Image: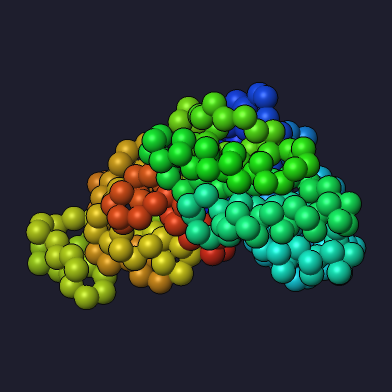
Length: 334
């Protein structure tokens, strides 16, 4: 029996998630291999639905450009000015120095400005520096593509509204009228005044009123009959208490299934949930089954990243992006 690991992408759900946003331009984030879903597949499926795409480095931008002529924005500082000019990659600056370098290298028509309102990742934080940037823009007659910020705690409405007020105050230091771009999980649910939505995890089904896009499948490659008292897997993590059937599933932490899920999660086989047992190996794990399960049966290893994230004490982002490592075929479900 061969290994048949694959991602199942429900494109109808992706389209549903994107098209729920009616009144904003959508910059779809496809960083980290489209949150583990696959850049090629996601860009091709969404190309007619979005205004542009967001990435975090030049390598991702080059990859995305293979599948679209829509605008591509690098949401992190870059010095790859020649590539940006030749490929028409837009990018943001978050310092006076960064703006000057972009201008000196002939990228004055590709610039977005990022403002820091509390994430402390990227963005201009100083009002003095923003005033200096405004002077440079005016002196060089440069019109920004947008002014952007990212909210760090959208689950906290009080803090997010304070951050928005801070953004409005700082944004006024830039005198030109340009589009506003906002990012942050669930920011779409706030009644802020902006033009472009940086759409991330919500597009992939992890947000309010969204549908999940990706499932991970494998297959039963072998079934072992295990006696009472026998161990299953490495390190004596699991000892069988009675005679039982154990299925071997050929996907492991080398494919993105986090080892800290060992002995703690369930999978679906033929619509029935079964417990995974023992330590997850690099290229397989084990499931306690009954006689109805046969070699070759499909196994839905990941049907909800929230479910696995809670068990692993992490966030769905990590669960999803880990599966970028998955070898095998990607199936598109139209």
